[in-house]
Every structure is written in structure tokens, then in C-alpha cells.
Amino acid sequence: MKKTKRILAGLGAVLLFAMYGATLVFALIDHPASADLLMASIACTILFPVLLYAYILVYRLLKGPKDDNEDQT
Image (cartoon, rainbow, N blue to C red; front, side, top):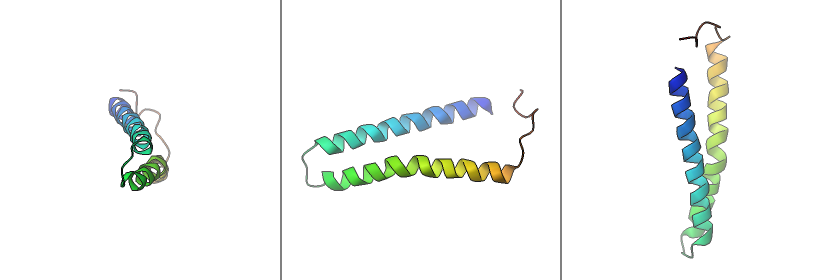
């Protein structure tokens, strides 16, 4: 389980960096659709971490108290 969490955390970090890069690219290109793409990219950059945090909170609430012997494999 610990290895899976690390892999998912790494993938999430890569996704965030990709969204930041896309936001920068959309801000710099001169294309008629770049303004819409920039707004969508900024929205995703803000909403993705917020939704992920909310998911983690709900998961912890539904799971209950953590067992101390769970992650010692």
C-alpha cells in the first residue's frame, strides 16, 4: 500500500507540473483560442488539488481511525 501511495503521489505531482506548464504555454501563445484554453488551464490547476484534498478528507472520515499495524508490511 505504501508503494502505491508513492506512485500515485508522483503521478499527481507530474500532472500538476504539466498543468502549470500548459498554463504558461497558453499564456504565451498568440492564438484566438488561447484565452479560453488559459482560463480552462487555470481552473484545472486550482480545482484539481482542491478536489483531491476533499476526496482525501472524505476517505479518512469514512475509513475511521487508522489502525497502527496496517502499514507495517
